[in-house]
Length: 219
Image (tube, rainbow, N blue to C red):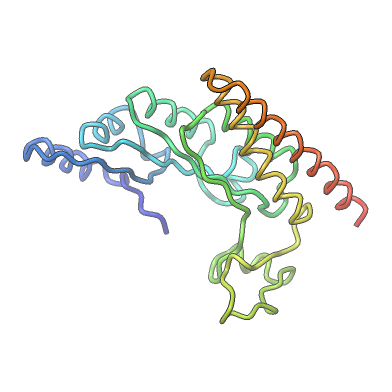
């Protein structure tokens, strides 16, 4: 379970007050949820020394977010990322690809979400089930969990039947990473050749996705 730094607004208000009263200079980053943020809370974070806030979304597709039972609106996540940036706080978000039933349409929605919210940071990974979770129970029968040598492996080595091949999602991760690199470098008018290289890598990954998707259709 992730720590949600702003779960108690009362506690955060007291924390910010004590930081200011004691004239303590501290820089920190934290994890929170979009539904536990508003402009007042963001100002308290800024006041208490927060320089970066990570806001979970996991996907840009509301369908996938609901299947994950995240209980958050992707539009609200986007709004809170932009509100944090407006207040001078860097924003980060988390992305997972390959959740059960996820399609290419959902992946495209995730890229669209990232471009709209445009966080300074994001982490992206391929979904893996953790023992004891609902996801693990859901996919155990179509996974390799019972074949894994747990003395040598971890939950990250569990794989299960998805909409597309594992290789497809590896390409999809690279597509999003490189497409965002191109998008941000172009918008900030950074090194032109660096942006072009990112776009070339993005196109290469996209071609890989197309080829792997065809394999999935034929399987």
